[in-house]
Image (tube, rainbow, N blue to C red; front, side):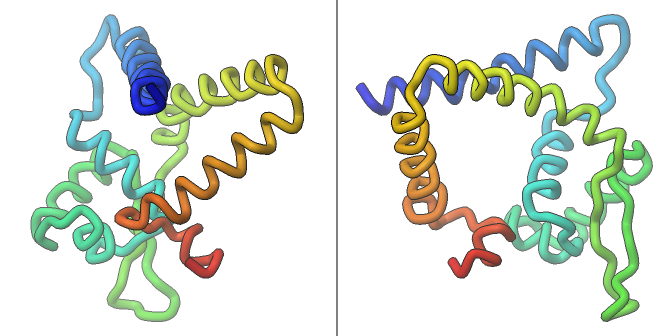
Length: 153
């Protein structure tokens, strides 16, 4: 039962995002492919990774990562910013163009969270937050985000 409930919520978030994307691009071709969307979500979640950090996280070769990154740069979704520490290294930063695209998902998340706060007591919301924090930090150790490292994970 718990697995089904979680899967249903996860699926509804994904499907809402897809609906919004299709609505937005109804009269024109979408500018990001599915793989590029996955790349962008990963780059954003990683903070501002280098191309090598992105390649390592995605388990792809550096040339393959560079190819994907260059395509995303050309489309205006990310930019390469030269590292001040090591001038040979470039960090990937998402642009406002991608943030606007990504906000389709975030806006719905905020709507649902507001509904959760209206529906449930503060104690229930605090317990849900605690449970999700444990799931994210301890039970999903295969995926490490920069925020996890900052919090001593």
